[in-house]
Length: 134
Image 1: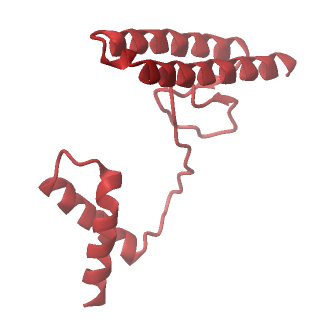
Image 2: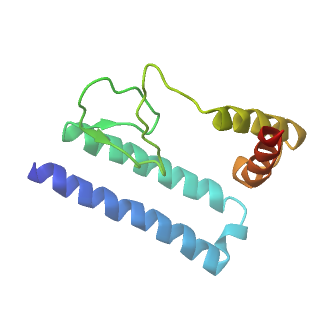
């Protein structure tokens, strides 16, 4: 367990270094240099591979590419950036509001394909409330 704790701390340092590297690059204007983003992506890819090897060494399952967990699993999360872990239920009840929100979001995404979903959410909520009031 000590090895796992040390590995976790090392990966946190690596993750913080990645963030610092990106912020420093932006601050110094390095992100405007052609090829800089590609170089960063290569470094981060190597770091992700390194994280996966550490995880494997301590018996953790790396989840950077996703996966389905059906039993208790010692896993490595966030090694390639933000990840989401959500429980999956066999029968999930979806509220009328959420169903309509999904429809409205799809319609907005179709109208505005280049706009990112978080930016469309406010409009989707408004449209959902309006539709359900009728």
